[in-house]
Length: 424
RNA sequence: GGAGAGGUGGCUGAGUGGUCGAAAGCACUGGUUUUGAAAACCAGCGACGGGUUAAACCGUCCCAGGGUUCGAAUCCCUGCCUCUCCGCCA
Image 1 (cartoon, protein in one colour):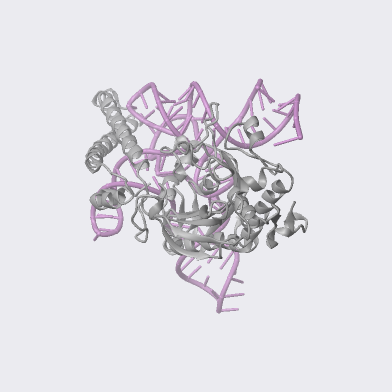
Image 2 (cartoon, rainbow, N blue to C red):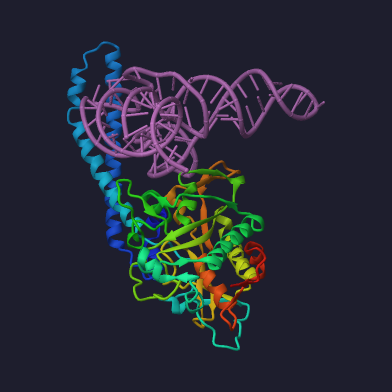
């Protein structure tokens, strides 16, 4: 959520900035709402003041044993007027809030212009795509024939966009999770957390999935109104919702492994083959809550943590900066890590690292207490995948394939695989 | 699932209709004292919005949402959560 004070003061400037990401802010409606709100707020407060003053004197009169009936007569219509004013005010506040909740974050100046992913800007590459003296296969051809990956059973159990994994592939999948968590906790300084996979609407509003993107979520039947998490970002970031953190405790760094559930509405026909786009997948997530002045440095650090995982696995990748039109609703800036997939002969997204500035923190009322002044200020939040497990598995399988269809196991994972060197 | 008890500031905890945003203690901050520290003493100490150069000042907030009343932390209703006992369960 944007700072309403800033919005009031610089509405045209902000509208211009938002246009860069293809969002049209209705300046006229907002200004009208805001003017009405201001007026109503003043009259409501005046009426409240009057009520308080008069009620106090009634109390005092009564204590002295005076006749309070004349005083009561004086306030006869006050209640009604006040109630009407309060209701009008809360209605307009709700309207403004709704509008505000639907406005995306402001972009950082360094975010390049552009409309779609075609306009994203490559920052750097790491590693060389492997060359094969045979025609490399994709992960489905490598995994499906021997039952490592079983998409048909998943259809039987549930439906499309799910998978069953067996034997060595299931173990490799699990090994990736352990390896990433271990790296983040031992080398990068994160605290591992275990969190609920079902969350309430407050949490989803806090990180920005609601109210706008309900269609991407799985909602549970039942009166609680719970949703399956689309990413660990939601429960982990919301850990600080409503909190005031002491400055010396920052930055908070959390990592979590969770399954993620996405309905991927609107993606029909896209990536229908294989593991790339599933309704359920595993992810190891990194989340940081930091001081505002540090967040841009922390984004680079966070990105480095995700890159480190890919480097340790020996997977070639590139870093791209998402352009204005492709940057997500809540993010001020996002780097995607794209891993090389020989089966598709292209780089595919495997991690997304974002700085949200105070956008999520404002929605969550997540603050910290400044040591110098004792005042509170909004935190900045960041998160990044470190990494998406399913896609990492795809990358390992495709990059480490051999002519006979076996898969070499990356050095770093072997201790997690009982010392085995080849998946067979 | 059944029965009961509760949810008050960073923490403990008083407050059952009238200057209560809320006693007291702890913690914290500043000061006095001390060679230094501790102790003692004095003072300060919630969040958010409006207002002000800054204050003063005004408003809102005592789990959440409704309601009763001139007036609600206090009474009523609903929801959520916590605790105790019983049942069930991994």
